[in-house]
Image 1 (cartoon, one colour):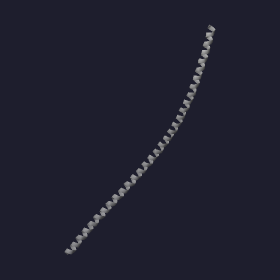
Image 2 (cartoon, rainbow, N blue to C red; image 1 turned 90 degrees about the vertical axis):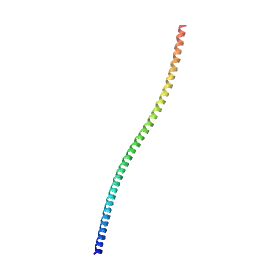
Image 3 (cartoon, helix red, strand yellow; image 1 turned 180 degrees about the vertical axis):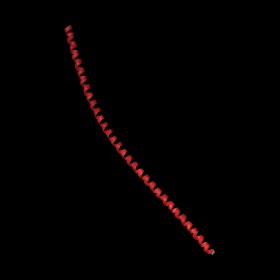
Image 4 (cartoon, one colour; image 1 turned 60 degrees about the horizontal axis):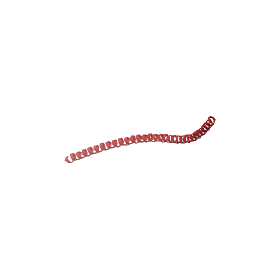
Amino acid sequence: TNLAIRDDEIRDLKLIDLKEAEEAIESLESQLASARQDFVNQEAEATGSIAKLQSQLLELKSANNHLQQKNVEMCQQHSEALASLSVEKVALKQTKEAIEVHAGDLSAKLEERHS
């Protein structure tokens, strides 16, 4: 009977150990499933963030290209305006010189008349 009692105790201990092991396995499986779900959620969030940032980057590149094009156009307009002003300056200088010559001629004629 001692042997039977001992066998029962050993069997009970094995059942307790087996039950604890099964509980530990279930707990680990649950933690693993939770960790996998967290990973999936984080991956989806990261993918969404990456897509949003890529979209913003494309918008910024487009805006930058537009600004560069406008800058080129404005530089061209500025150069054209400077060239036009330079031509006008030369024309005004020539007109001024012509007026000064004409004024000199008129002044000389006035002096001739008074003399």
